[in-house]
Image 1 (cartoon, rainbow, N blue to C red):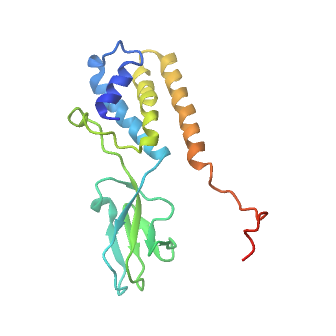
Image 2: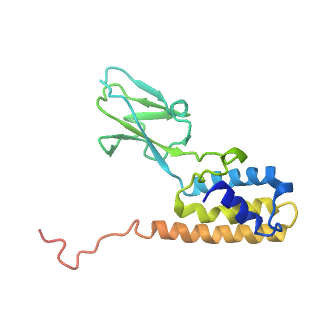
Image 3: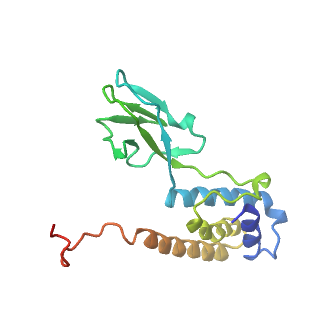
Length: 189
């Protein structure tokens, strides 16, 4: 979905097919919606660090190095695909990662991706969300736009967004946390 497609879709959600009078509000609402959806369904980005020799504590300001930096997930630092322990192997302060002296090798920092802002100049570009979350944008954006004028319509669209977000969360997480039951011979070597 492009910014222009989002604009058209939201306009058809009760604005008589145009948002000309509310265009500046549309972009604010769209960017609030992008940020809210990104917090609910975060995209994890990766930043490879230069190889370390372990001679001293290494500091990397990921917030300055990555323009799309929004924060860190629970497990932020990896060595050869394995997560390291915060508090023992590294610590985080603001947007910086401090890697303990003595750790050497190749490391990757995982961080939360902040979506690109939508502007009139970027309306032809695809919105910066995973395709599975794009359907959440129109109702949430419309709920913000209707907030001042028609509270009941804003509430309706917010409810629609919440319902769709819950369904999406269930779909994305339906396989997580299940324990294996060894009833069909899997436990035999």
